[in-house]
Length: 244
Image (cartoon, rainbow, N blue to C red; front, side):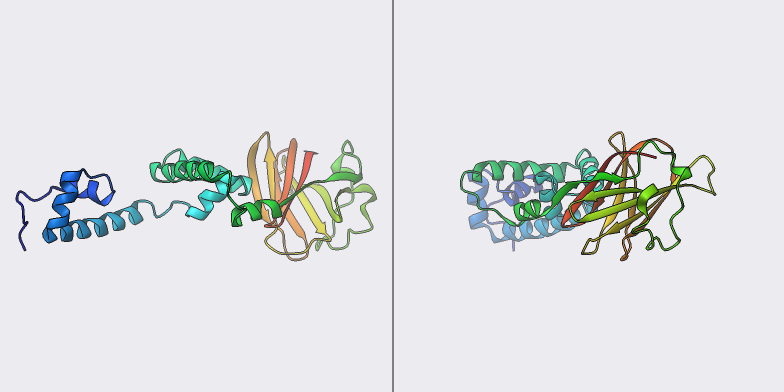
């Protein structure tokens, strides 16, 4: 089927039509011409496949929304920020989201992302047993399963965050004599997907999982001052100024 009004539209004009940015002359032509409409459909399918291929590693729209609202874990938020610095596609999506939320702010009802933000509780743990100045190498080592330290924390570092306790023991790393190992136990916490994140001077250094019994191990730590964050979808527990 030939174009009803030659010359037929070029690819640039068809792309402008697909993106909703065509002028009146192009729109009038498309209304009359089935040939150019079919070309536009094929071009739109090709553009969709190319976009999916080029941006296959992009964060999902939901994750971009969570990033904008500040509810992503700190390590994932940093990864999304690095991605946005290089990806115009996702940068445009976040920009559009900002504009939409700003426009809807006066009447916007709390949505799923806002509900998630409200549900994430941030707790700052306080030291209730042990002294930060004590040499960690003078303290008794945790048992291999770590489950027997409850009630034996007089010389361990025991932190309290609400009903949750975090017991910490620092030992020498036998595989790296100049490094240390952090052994931890989290008690009185429900739910899964708990992770331990170690930060130093605002930089993320390590993430390890916390097992179903509340144990976690972080090896190969250089001596220094750190922040330990235990995070799950429901809460975040922070231990600040942790001297290792």
